Picture 1 (cartoon, rainbow, N blue to C red):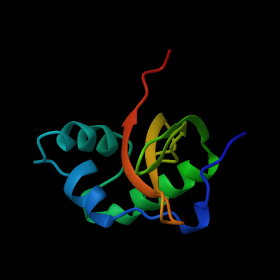
Picture 2: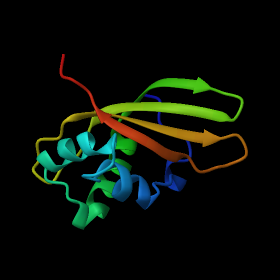
Picture 3: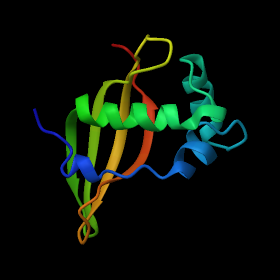
Picture 4: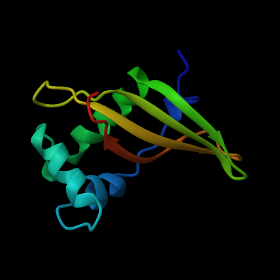
Amino acid sequence: MKRLPHLESAVIDARKITDYLLSPVHPYGRAKAQFFNRFGFALSAWEVLQEALQRHAQGGKVVKVEKTAFGTKYVIEGPLPTPDGRDPTLCAVWFLAKDKRAPHFVTAYPIRER
């Protein structure tokens, strides 16, 4: 199974979580915040989601790799470990810039069960 390269160096900017994924006021993020809140994640303990996204990258499957002029985008799917244990299937996007060794987290969104 293909994995995210340089996973040990992967970076998730805290602001991606606090100002977007768990933000109840972000125009696009608030729907995602509602989703993550349903599974026990909270803005007051944002580090829990950060750790879960790292674990998702470790255990998930790279389902798409797209090379661009600036680097490579990786799309990962798999269960997200959650505080309530329900572990929904999530899609996460990571980007590895051409001149960097550390992939950066871009976004995450739920995958509808088929």
